[in-house]
Length: 398
Image 1 (tube, rainbow, N blue to C red):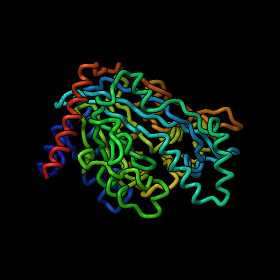
Image 2 (cartoon, rainbow, N blue to C red):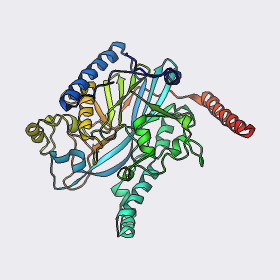
Image 3 (cartoon, rainbow, N blue to C red):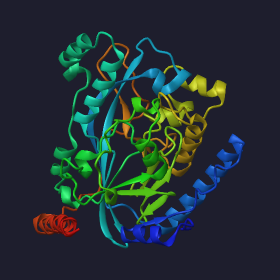
Image 4 (cartoon, one colour):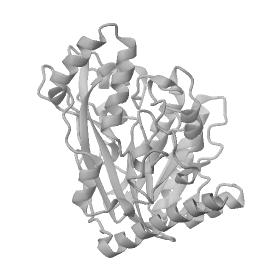
């Protein structure tokens, strides 16, 4: 695959981690014409797919785990494409564990591992600032919480069930950093990292924006979610990348300027993991069985329905969803739909006029996890402790 023109030292850092930058999507959005940008992106996406299939290496293991189900507005999910009696639907937030090969050895990556306690506290803080009757709302939420936002799992217990140790995690990444507090996973001045060897893979636009937000963005990002994280734990990306030959992180600006999408070549074909849509209905609206969406698609000519309350770049999000749609293989069960797996997926709930997706993925498992074993985990843990002691010794000598 083609390499993006970046400075040598940066490429060397990526090389040691089993990562290489790719130039398939460079300069694809320079035109002032939205239609021309869309054509360029789709063309480069097809070239990327051809290269990925030519190498034809699959990830060893991919599994998704349900974390929590939360209410979400129909307007945010589908815009003006549908109007329903019940203005809310439910989405189930998931995280993904992937193991794959690189020239630097086998790696383990977590996609969208959310610290649920921090996310809830952030939501409470924002609500409390906006609502004049905050005490009443807080009490009501505490009573209704088990029913309104049922928890299914947490990152720590789900990972433990796979047999993969926290020390074995090499990378974590997200579509974007909205609502994420990374201090538990990566460590800070106050606490040790739960994943002591993990590094965050993030587009540099997203990292810089999250560190220096405008007030409008502050409603979506925890204000202190990045405080005290050591710079060595962060890998800011300046282009789309390949992790080995079976996994890619692709720039998909729209929902945020630094949004990214995970592409995995699996035994089930090329899969796209994203937050840009909550259901197959967002990507193939012409086949949707949700009231009004197919008609809306026919009337407007829209071939995707973007998801998101306040996308920073709405036109780019539409183009990015077309990019995802071009890359993904057909769904293994129904070829009318694409193999695009929402990390937050529309879920049926026993409520009046509940909304269901035309087709759902649910929890997935492809392949079997390779556990690190106690000896290897102990060695990595000792290595991490030795690194920490070395840093302390250097600080003392200074």
